[in-house]
Image (cartoon, rainbow, N blue to C red; front, top):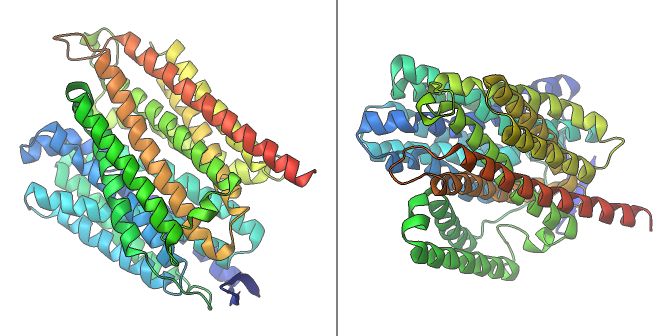
Length: 477
């Protein structure tokens, strides 16, 4: 079987046998779920880390931020390596790094080592795009499309799986026990990959753009730093704005480097394709909205009754609120491949954005009962699941098979930045709605944040509809 031409050379693809495919598909799902869940372990453990290591909450927040940063940087690098002949070795080496990082989080070492371990765990986020590349190379086309959609969904709902488990273990055995969960599942993922990952098709070659990697890392570090340091925006606005300008300049420099490079980290010319650019814009704005609502609901659920609202849930019980998010997200991911035979992927993106907007509207209008929070979280999960399952189809429709990992890795960098900004925007709005001397924001601040989220999802919907209109005009001139 002959695949996409790369550099004028026909690439031989190696579809796996049916029995091997049955093992390969669950392996791809498991690895994608593990790396997503482990990277999200920092979210429910921030308070426990601050208490156990005697550091401020701001410092403890870096256990999440550093994982997002290393994942955002590693994703395009691994995507480029995964497009070459050493994809299996890249997957195994990356999982080995994640396992080593997981061991650092469990050992009784100082806080700096915990941050190093979390950074190593975050590198695993770059494997999601490689799992998609494996599926597209080694499964029949119809089967691979469905599997890629589910990998995209699993990479998001993994947070909903890891959050309550980590919170429960932290309550029972402390923060080290919670991170111990990460060590066990990442070791299992490494063993699974070693047993099931096939070699990449022949005829491919790849190089990593070192200069582009360094500049992109600097830009992303600034972006995530600005997203995480909310006090900087409220107390030192000029400094924050200056750093934001520097980040934009670095991203522009990176784009120029990529355009001039013969072996770019990301094929910027391909990214400029209207379908890919539109999909990434939808992912960026949609990611802001999706993570904003996730942040609002979990924070609202944990607010004590003394604030005049909220439910005062423990970290573990608040994590259970994420169960509808994960379950309905998975359901949407299973349904989307069936529906996309009748409805174009851009329209499915628009539909997912509308559903998420409905979740914002529900949260804004009704949140006095815990069941209403569960309902809003379920609506969010269904919308995010459908949106995430449709996204790969939009991008891969105009992407050569050999560039699957690279193209999707850039989309995941965009998603990570969008999620980080969504969290930061939510924090800024709630901080602005907190009166002098008050510990918690006014209830109306949550409504304001929800309205901002509805605006973000409206932009996402319009962008997706524009993509659908363009595809329709191309197919029906």
